[in-house]
Image 1: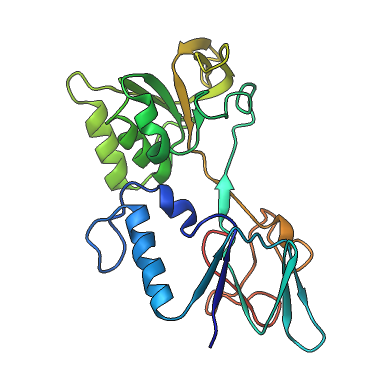
Image 2 (image 1 turned 180 degrees about the horizontal axis):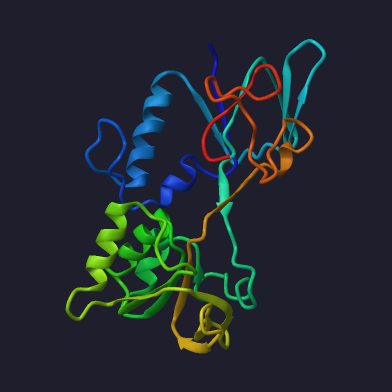
Length: 259
């Protein structure tokens, strides 16, 4: 058996930006980059070949049953493929978001990556799931104040994470503020983020909230655009498969991960 991993950027994907992992079997606590390093070392020890900077652009089922995998100018022929393209950060789609995405301008989708750049500053975090809560807690270790806004009245994160978040917010002189039933409608500033326009969904009141950065944690979008004409996808763009063996509708093609 010969195994080749084609990676668009570098091994690890989303987990590379995770500060704390406590639910991986056999490991009590570890950060994402360290876990990926261990996985990569183990894969290489078993003879796996890893090619980074190799973006798959198309796949085709050949008449002889093999599968052709195209990467820019290189093509590979294989008997089986495991699709694991992962997902990308979901955008808010509001004015100013794209404008301030450049390095140092103030918009980020990764608290673990960029929190140190906001040491002693005021930031806003957006979201209410596990990632949003976990990343917000990480931000509180660096920022002067962190204001977490959530469009609902309660969080969708696990009970353990939510309790940890609320405990942090209720501490004396806490640097964490929570705003429920609130959305961001625009990100504003001159050259860099200086404020965010917030709207209360219950009162329709709007306010310009001063801040130095905005961290957006509202989920992911599957990276399956290149598979539209190859495998069957759901209405949301995720790859359809059977639950038992993770098989797609194409023989020899399987799926793994958040896609």
